[in-house]
Amino acid sequence: MARRRSPGSGLLAVASILAPSLAFQAPLQHRLELARVPATVRGRLATVRAAAPVAPAPPAPVDRRIQLAKAFVVDDFGRANPDLLQDDFAFELGSSLLTKERYLKSDDLLRLREACGDTLRVAASDFRIDPGDDQAVLFTLAVSGVQSAPYAGLEGEGKDPLKGQGPWKTLPTCGRCAFDASGKCYSATLGAPLDRDDRSRGVETLADACWVAMGGKLGGLNVGLALSELVTRRTPATPRGAPATEPLVDAADAVGVADAALRELLLRPEGAPLPDGVAAALFAEDCVVLGEGFAAMPLKNAAKQQPWGSFDGASFCNYRIAADDARRVLCDVILPSGRLEGASVHVDADEKIFRCSVGWVIREGEKANPLAELQKAALPLTRCGNQNIRWNDSPTFYTIRRRSIHTG
Image (tube, rainbow, N blue to C red; front, side, top):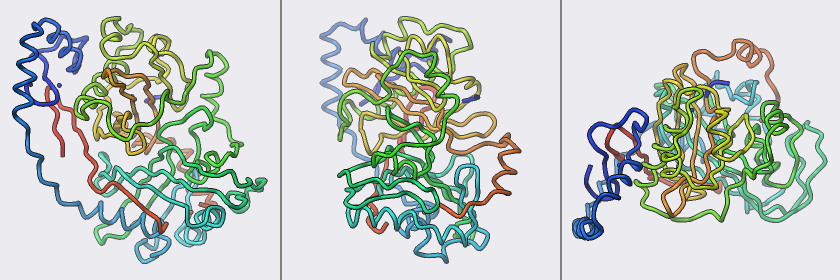
């Protein structure tokens, strides 16, 4: 399946021309150059940097499309304000589409509230414009609560109810909604997985993510992942250690290392080995790599097998620090076909990557499977669907360019 630091404060740039095998590797170049500088000189440089703080830039005005997306989320994803939805509104649920009428009748949030009462929370963050569609807004969702009553999932699924098991929280998922010129939403989707752990399978909708977080098991099968697990020695997919509320290193440095690591790992030609020097400079010894369609495995194995497929021509954008774990740096990956994927890395206190997760499909591109598109049109379902909403109003995005980092 096809997939994918200039002298100054925070992040140091590299030499003006990079060796081809180390293209975009600012952190690596920085470490190699810094190793050649005497310690006394490095100390003077650090003193100069500390004496010249940079005033933060004023916040940028909020884009109207972002405001509309936040309204969509706070209004129970449009269901508490049907006038926000176009008459031909369509909700994408896996390989099916719901019409506006069927979407408004969905009871997923109602059932969650019945099971969790007023403890149900939806955390929304990372609102940003879809880099391939300026009418659409992407955002990250995580749902949490304390289960106090049985929960049977969506109507018609026939699941045995889950008994109260206390607090739960989903892994982050991606939501997307698109608006026309009048400001009405004409399409939306919720729950595209952005990662998985040792319990989830990375194939769930938002409702299924809640079901797994509450202790349920999924009946579906991720064939690619299942086959990969048969031939791969079991390696934990859950990140080591506890989530952090603050970055372990400077955020810009973390982003620089993340960009360098993803490029070195994913853009390497087929069959080309990952040089030991690059691996030692960018990755922790226990680094784990996993994907939507392949099992978690040590970096050495992943670099050799390249199970993610081809990322030729891919571009990386919208780098940001995750709201649920400040060790995690996320980014959007655009493939030549227009397909949009999510990727993330975990950065430790040594500025090295200890976990890399790739290949999470957010949106298909121009070359989508025509059969799947036909199925979406022909097989609508009758299922899909907080007042307790919180979000990060001013997420910081980092755009990586050839030798600099810009925030905005």
